[in-house]
Image 1 (tube, rainbow, N blue to C red):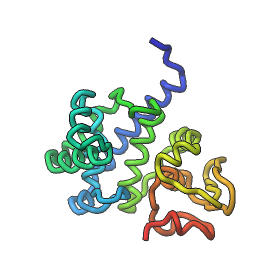
Image 2: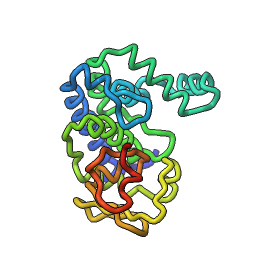
Image 3: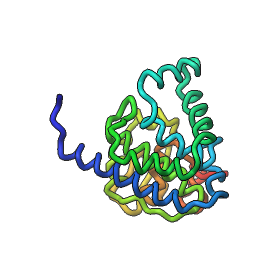
Length: 213
């Protein structure tokens, strides 16, 4: 078994902190907010939060069984599970699943702990940005995730940066080539993960292509 590096230890600690902080944030949401649309197309806030705990609750055999039911479509599987779990668990149970699993070792199939951190941070922003809840993700977490943005990850999330350079206002980070699109690092992270962000968060003559209609 490989030795855990200091960087991995720091990322695991960041994951635990992110889950606990998000659970506290979600605990404050109203019933109307839980049923409001998120940045994830077709999902309300409750589906997003239900999805966030899927990896804690499903073993690999169960995940494979669900994938088989979905005829091999990961998107169809996650959508079906999120909707079923959102109906099954109360909002208090959904936040407890996140808080109680702060140190759960789950990671996505690829990307390791950095991908797990991205899963939590971006889905958290899918909720808070959509609702207009002011939550600043600590920049050290955002920095780790932006450092992992590359051609392959952009393709995975269906992001086209042709003619655009993303430039963060609050971090020394940029990506792409062309006309600058500027904004807070966490909003550019959403763009890099294939999200359309709320109006008023980005600047630049080509920013509208990344803004929700």
